Image (tube, rainbow, N blue to C red; front, side, top):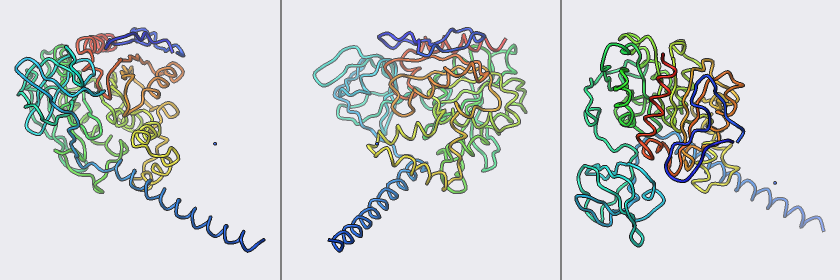
Length: 403
């Protein structure tokens, strides 16, 4: 494909920025025999039962919404201006990040130096973690709500079929674009904090914004069976959010989703009668092919490739999902508004390949799409790699399609 990849955390356009010229350049003695057959059959049953058990366990991990925070990184040294972290693939990523531990959140900037086995990052704000603190790199360096990025907001509740889901409503800065609402949808296991990175840009452009929660979020009601449904039911919670925006003056809707938020938006565009009001979509590391993502997740867990179909079969039976509907290349949604699709090349959670394939096929799907790749960062870290360039690309896209 014809991407403009080069070194460094720059945004890399794979197509022309003009939404009217969308496209991507295509860049396995008889008694003794009987005994062996019986042994082989018993062994096969044992292997089959073990595979089934692993498949069931994998589907349980996939569907379980229980938060399990991990703090895999280590603070080596710290002071008012810098934080030194044990060097890993994650702590060496470029850009601006949050640094979270159970008692706090700091903001750190780019790597400014190295030490043996360690990287030095500038400290941008927040408390100073003590040496020896176990931390995690957080894609959101702000806490806890839009007030942290200087925005006035209201806590509202969205009436969904499972109960009230809290949301942040950020009013428009002026009247000129106040009737365009951006509804923001976080990913699996995430939170509406993901929206804090882009809310200032949206606000500065005069849009109203609604950062929603959905079933099984820590702050929201549980689903009836206590499982994630991977977008297959969560889209109705998004629909409730869009309905709230329309009831409060929205005439045009922009949907903005990260990771599984992309799958939720895709299901909404395919199934909701309100989808016709969507004027644009922004996807960051979207999940546009569940099977491809599950294969990647199985590799991450060092599971044999043949177990992924078994796990998807179990998941499908347990929650009733049709995974074919979540392969947007082969089953694009009914409504296909102009879409900005951003994905990082180093994403090991949701592979970049399906995004590339979808963008390449977009012209044949009658789907206006602009595609941008970002180098050097993990899942949903594109803003973190280059905040200013990311915000500029977002701003230009919205200005072009929302005239």
